[in-house]
Length: 401
Image (cartoon, rainbow, N blue to C red):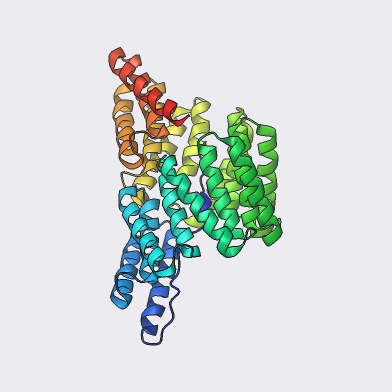
């Protein structure tokens, strides 16, 4: 099961312009308007239009302030964030790096905005499985925030959460848990136990327990976070959909499909109403429900949902996004299970190619694609080709341990 909302909903990385000056007051107001538009378009899932407006913002900032001004750094960060969301990581990385360099030069190496740039670049690397490159950036970002804002600031909790996510992705659960606990303590004290950032900490800690197979502990925290979000945000907020998805995830893993399905359907309805029927999070919700149909042997129903999810992802994110690879992989898995190897193989191959291109050749998701394609080769008596793929997948996974 893949959750259909991301932590980015609570840690929106787009930054607004902050400069003040009389001679360029009109441009400052225009920049703020453009950045507000970018944020709105991003939240609506209209990434292509958001990219257009973000490019306008960057051009205006460079024209108004020169190439090395802090507001240029903020515009670069916003543009990079959108490419990141689109899965265009090769485009995002140099923009994040340039934003970081400008911030360090103009604001100094220990400014909170520099910490934000470090965090965003680290998130990019974590997404691609480049954990060794991400960790020192996360640590430096955390250090800056602790020094500049104090050890109990909510932004420090955000950095603790992000570093914990990195450790959890590597299976370093003993290192992740105390950081999650500290982040939760900070948020509860600074913001209150019912604040969305506190419930995010509950969710992250629950995720950690889920990954360790501690389902009873995970379910308790997921349920608690869901109740808090419903109370604070109302029953139809996307973060409530996230909570529903998380609880359903527990039931799904344990084969309790009758319990999971209505929660996933309610989550999908919330997201369709709140975000629109063609939002990427809706596509992930469709994938989740399709997985239940697949596991119940209702292949025709699963196929329709997988196909709709694929169409949404391709339209909103472009043909080469990791979420597109996920939908292709799921649809191929469905065909493979039915012995429709000729339909499954090109989908597996395209999914693999997208993951290699966007995530790099050594990402765990690439290993997943390699193993899936290898199983198809075994089923079609191509044992030598299957063996090569399985060896490569094993090498990737062994290197991550």
